[in-house]
Each structure stands twice: as C-alpha cells, then as structure tokens.
Image 1: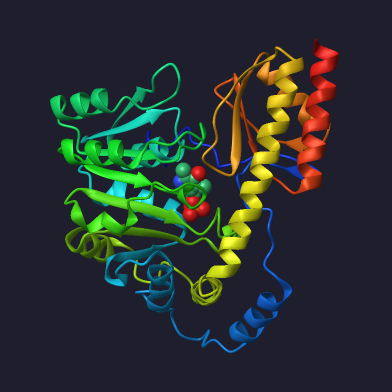
Image 2 (image 1 turned 45 degrees about the vertical axis):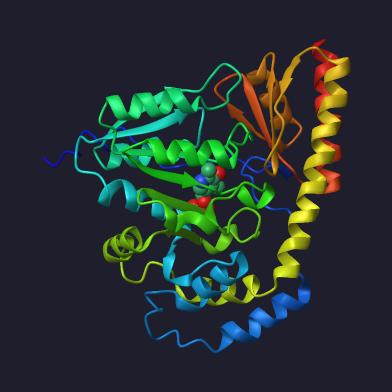
Length: 353
Ligand SMILES: *Cc1c(COP(=O)(O)O)cnc(C)c1O
C-alpha cells in the first residue's frame, strides 16, 4: 500500500480564509484597480499573443520594464511565478538536505513551510519583545551555528516594522550565510537595497508585483542579485515558469510608472487613515494594547481577546488576519472598507468593554 512520506503526510492545502466575506482585508492585496484605459490596452495586447508557443523563458520584456522602473541592471533580474516560487526555488536549490536556515518570528509563514519541503533544518529565532530585529544577535547566531541561509521580510509581514538600510547592510556583510531579503512591501517604504544588490556576494532581494503594483492575480515576483547568484537562479528554475499572459500584462503595467506611483500614494493615504482611526479607537478602548508604526500597506496591532475580536469581525463579514493568537493584521482598504472595519471595531470593543 502506498504511503505518503512523513514530510508531506500531515500537510493541509493552503486555505487563506474559508467562506465569503463582504470585506477582505486579510491578504495585503491592493484595493486599487487598473484604470479602464489600461485594461482596454491590455485586452488588445493580449488578444494577439502567440499562445501556441511556450513563453519567453527569460521573461525579457517584463524584467527590462522592472529594471527600468527601479533603475537597475536587467541582467540581474530573474522572474518567478510569484515570489513564492522564488522562495521555494531558493530553499530547494541553494540548500543541501539538513543545512541550517534561520527565519525570524514573527515573519512570513511560508519561509518555514518551503524550508521544510526542502528538508532543510529550519531554526526560528524570536524577535525582540518590541518585535524589532536584533541585528547583533542574528549575526552571532548565524556565524556560530554554521547557518547557510537567513531569510526575512523588510518591511516585515506581519509586524509592518522596517529595518533601516544601514543595519540591513551591516547584517548582510557580517554573516557567512546567503541572505534572502524579501522586500515585498518596500514600495511602501524607502530603505531598499535594490540598487546595491550586486555589491554583495551573499544577497538575493525578492520583490513582488502582488502588493504595491496591484497584480496579485498575475503571480509574478522578481529576484535581484549579483551575476553568480542570478546565473544559479536561472539555471535551476523551471524553464517556462512565468506564463505569456502574466509577462505581457506586467510588462505593460510597469511601463506606466505614473500609474504605479499614484496607486502607491492612494494606498499609503488609506493606510494612514486606517492607522489614525485605530489610534483614535485605542484612546477609548484599552483592549487595543499596542499599534505598531506601519511601513507597509497594512496595520498591525496587539489586542486583548484577539481571537474573539477576529471572530466578531468575521461575523460582521469583515476578514482580517489573526496572528499568533494576540495580534490583528488589517490591510488598508478603500475609504468605505476602512470606515466599515473601524465602525465594526468600535462596535465590538464597546460591547466588550
Ligand atoms: C505577499 C508576500 C509575498 C508573496 O508574494 P507573491 O509574489 O504573491 O508570491 C512574499 N513575501 C511576503 C513577505 C509577502 O507578504
């Protein structure tokens, strides 16, 4: 009788949140749709693609558009089917079985998942009490334990906190490990290391089109690193990992920098409104214990009875993320969505109090 191996035996299919909710503020997507004029342009462009042929394995057009947008060398860019694919690829290809990976906690949960599929030895280091990263502690731990790979998000999902450029550089320079710096939310902050990615021999920066660019449905992520690491990534990826439609659409959208800047501005404005609204609520309701200074498109807060509040928001048909049993992560939404979630919170906290 066939039996699944033990590394996958108990896994369950990924399920973000079951059920249909009126308001979805649980996945950090952008609430900004593409303008109608761009949609129409895309319709034309994608109607005539050679779908009988395999897509460009190097995703040249979209890598070039991406590189131009950020002012970097296109030869250092590798496209992936979402940065999720790139994380998985890096874990499987850059580590031998049993080698040590360090992830921080709390951080993006998929790191640990892909490390376990890759049969790496994943060590999760707790962040400091204020949820910031202790750079010296990371350096010391990595170098005295033969760690081969260190991966973390900056700014961080879920804490929304950022690590400044100088500290990030110091961390990368001081460890022997390969550092995978996940800048999924860096379009909302200003401490990117993208322009200097090639100055390090041990750095891969990940970016995604799923958050600030509002293209989560396309599944497109990018890795930026020096030539040696980029060659290795291109050599180990599956040849046709990014489909023709995603390549064509993203290449077109990224060629409208003004559009992206405007979308980012709108998201940041919404994020500030949400942040201020929650700050106001916290003055009246002591159940809100701490609100973290956001560097992303979401707000992270520590609340009393988080589980219960999360459930009651779901009862209001509003989905947010419950993290670690005591935090809520709320994605910035449209004006109306923000108003709804703030009103629901007010309602819930007033009844609780
Ligand atoms: C959303 C997210 C990603 C996933 O990006 P995809 O390109 O959609 O796979 C990667 N890292 C972090 C930290 C994220 O929050």
